Image (tube, rainbow, N blue to C red; front, side, top):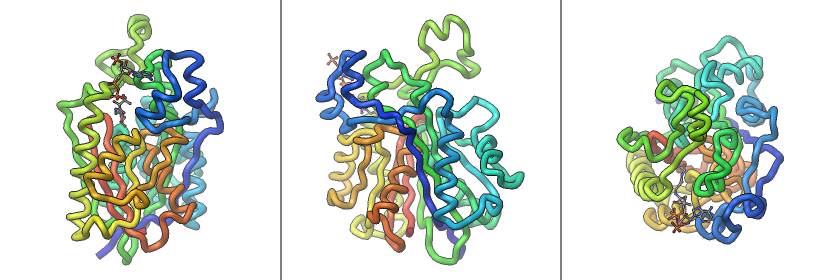
Length: 325
Ligand code: UT7
């Protein structure tokens, strides 16, 4: 049996930091409120001129270095994002050109904050079926460009960043199970009204602030806890493993309270859960690959470890992936 194995990871966070204290200067909020409700202390914001493809490129170069693979050996790029450089062409195509790889398959995948999980799922299928040998899987966001900095219930949550992983065909176990889900009936819980075919850009759409992300935080919260738990349990069961076999759980870094609730429901000890949201906030599709890369580089995730990742996001989408590093 063939597996898709993660050979290398990389990540990139823009240098500029926006702290909770910075928000106090222009919003009716406090560091205390943000920290106690979310666990987030600061997030990164890309300077003008730095776009999603730029940070995706930085993360991808590092992942290729770790995998010891030249870009010319890639045969595909799948990039999850909700804040692409343009609606079209895809950011994956721009990344393909920046990396100077061959004329390989490259496409964006839109699954909200589950974008990296979905991209890994699709990539896993392509590698296991023999259609692809080496794929670059990316989650990248300059989500600050679609944040409404007058809406205190959303703008304090999100930050910019990118994470990437090179997956390759292997005889040894890599990705063992992967479960993705959606519930389109809940699309209105988290979305951006403007810019698509329903509400194209007009003076009115700009005035209505339609080109910014909107969210019903309370309902997303409830669904997030439920879906992260269900997908994680399913991924563990499908792999014929038990929760105690997991060496490290890397959940979507959206809210510390959500992570804590899921951790308790999964009966997972604190030391087995990787958390870095205090530094980056919610980087949407980049959150899991950034955390995975940091965990590997810090020695928290080692070769041979069993890793469980899980995410939820706009769509509504959710999913979990279990793999041996
Ligand atoms: O990848 C998916 C991304 N989305 C998520 O993960 C979001 C999930 N949801 C959440 O994380 C939480 O619902 C939030 C952090 C967004 C909000 O926390 P909450 O405990 O659900 O607060 P709330 O929405 O019930 O608001 C409580 C109060 C409200 O005031 P009133 O109506 O009680 O007077 C809000 O207006 O807190 C107010 N509030 C704020 N106060 C200070 C909302 N945002 C802020 C703020 N600073 N930034």
